[in-house]
Amino acid sequence: MTARLNKLRANADGAAAVEFALAVPILVSMIWGLFQIGMLFEANAGVQNALGMAAREATIWPTPNDTTLANKITSTKFGVANGTWGTPTIDTDAAAKTKTITVTYSQPTDFLFISGPTVTITKSKVIYLSS
Image (cartoon, rainbow, N blue to C red; front, side, top):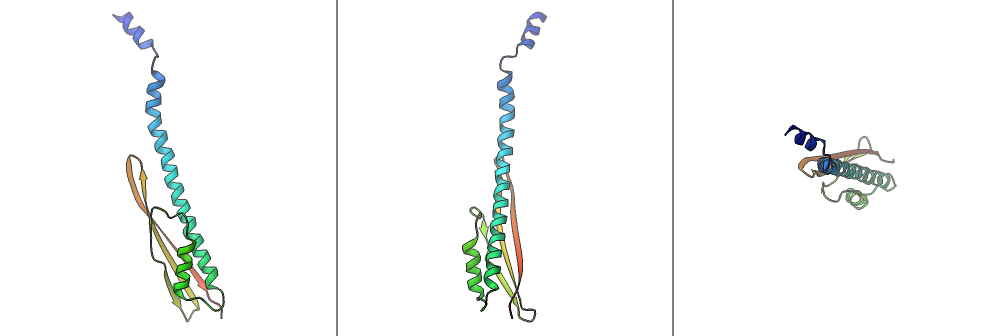
């Protein structure tokens, strides 16, 4: 009986299949998580780009109105495909000759086997207006 049991323990047939079955779900989950984080970085870059384009637009003379700036932000954003894009808010301070543009974007994350948190990206930019 012990000789047969030792022979069974020494048999390595199927060991690679078992290791593969244990390793693949972990590997796929990690790769999927990297894609999710990459989407967040892309959305962050898209929001930052949209704010920068609106800031450039706001510094020309005559200064465009707030609707034009909000349209510029919305038209130049990228990387925000599956999230919720908030309406840009533009606050004008006439005494300091500044405009503050704020944009909010929320993106849910999905890590295959579990639902991740919803990540909210909020960016603001202060623009100094020309005299």
